[in-house]
Length: 430
Ligand code: UDX
Ligand code: UDX
Image (cartoon, rainbow, N blue to C red; front, side):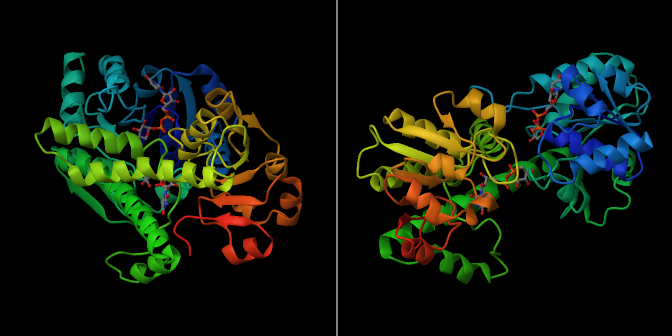
């Protein structure tokens, strides 16, 4: 089928290149001409496993093309995916201005019977909202709107798109729902066709549940520290229960990223607006915020009780490993807290690049883990990049002022670290 994808970000680029991989004819548009130029040359502007190969395949087969501006992509499209950002507004709600702007822009040029699909995470009621905007802006009759939320994890987006746990389609028009489901031919997963509001709610509920699960294990980790139990053992013990499962039971510095914080905030906002105080979810947010502070306290303890004048080496700045994304990263928030308390922060991250310079101008960015540890009173490991497992800790220890390490991702082996003479602390470990 002829597909247009608007927005070549993490979600749009994955969606476009995967649909081309499935054999569809895809035109992907972005407002950012520099990004489009790079993509046309086969350069991937984000770190995503498998994306360079898919992009090369799509361009070579001419099934995947990139253009500047949404109208240029939608003219002959049968299905149009909206993948522009829906950032968090000041009031906590999801900001729909980009979705609205694109809908107004494409309405007059949409072909009859086109299906417009919200793939970005949008509040409940957005399918009706986009339908209204399209008809106001001159879309021909027969244009319908559907919700088809994505559940992609950054770093594994291509794998998650091609091997989804389920495909969710929300649409009042059964024929349009069938057309959207047919796009996923070749992918083996349950297809849940439902009403738009339920589909939109599924996305928020899924992210809110996962965020709450992470806050739960972080809270249990705090309990473990108080009663001298080991959270890793606890996670194992409860994870065997299929009703709980092992996934998303890794304690850490707290959750962040481009989705959880804004989606949880948008759900809390929508609940309040609907007259429901979502205390459980608010609790997950409060635990998450406190978790950032618990990490700062661990570092303060590791350097002897005061951060003023201390040198802290930071390993990892992205919100999780295997991505270059620093949006709402716990590591970035914790670095700012360390700076606030007068510490000198020298950080290394394998992928953070330019964004880190912009977001953390006061942080001294270093070339590798050893360089970040040089002369430090303590090192704090904030992102679970695999390479941090394999550093030469003798060399690290020798380069530091004091051998103190806070492992906020429980990546390392406590006994081995202590054998190497490190004052080692982690999250909920005995
Ligand atoms: C998007 C949605 O923002 C988010 O709600 C959802 O949860 C995940 O998908 P992401 O792909 O990470 O997030 O967004 P981003 O990486 O910011 O990409 C959005 C792209 O849309 C950018 O490249 C931007 O240039 C482009 N865009 C934005 C347009 O092409 N036109 C616009 O009018 C606005
Ligand atoms: C998330 C959802 O997983 C995905 O389905 C949705 O489409 C977008 O939002 P992503 O933002 O890429 O994906 O991150 P995810 O892998 O879910 O991690 C979110 C945060 O939770 C990260 O900060 C991560 O470090 C943290 N986390 C996750 C933990 O601290 N422990 C865990 O066990 C899992």
